[in-house]
Length: 255
Ligand SMILES: [Zn+2]
Image 1 (cartoon, rainbow, N blue to C red):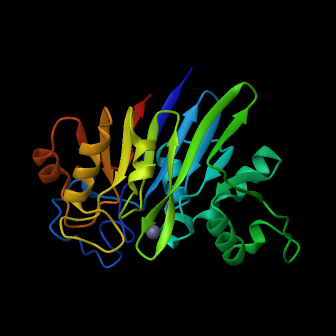
Image 2 (cartoon, rainbow, N blue to C red; image 1 turned 120 degrees about the vertical axis):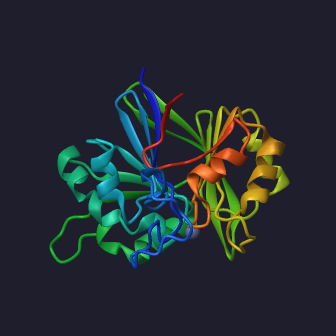
């Protein structure tokens, strides 16, 4: 059975370059062109995305993702949710509402900001059904099952949700994981982890903090995401040990 995980976007909230064409110190390369954080899992014919970034339409087209069954949300910030509106064609295609999953707080915020997705408005049918997650849940399609573990992590003044899906950890927005929740990240094959900058940041892990967390949890492979304009792909790759790599848009692996 096909099991494929794709980093759809690995940029920070403004991506790189910014809309002003500012690109920090990044070398000109496709590896440094980053859309906003988002990921996709294909397991058999089950297609699930994590977050709907403002770049989601371009990300789906570029990665040739033609179907979508469910969406898992990490948190309510605009760089992870603003593309929600783009998902309407999957409602038409599936002829059923798209189930979405998130913490109680995230679902509440999505319903407030994007009410038309969940209740009929101005003659438009709702396209989604909202599910508040529990610590462990699964997403199924016929005989295919994705096992998902969820836990809260600190993301500045809010909490975001970290996920372990099959043996892959995904924590895109986080500045601290409690020691209790670090246990969920042991024995992973892959860990996709927030690594915003070299310098410290109040809402995100910086490079030293991300490396420290990886050192404690020891995944077989770690992929750094949510990269800001001071983290050049090539310079970063050179200074990392072999089992840790910087993400780039479209990076995928079979698991
Ligand atoms: Zn955020």
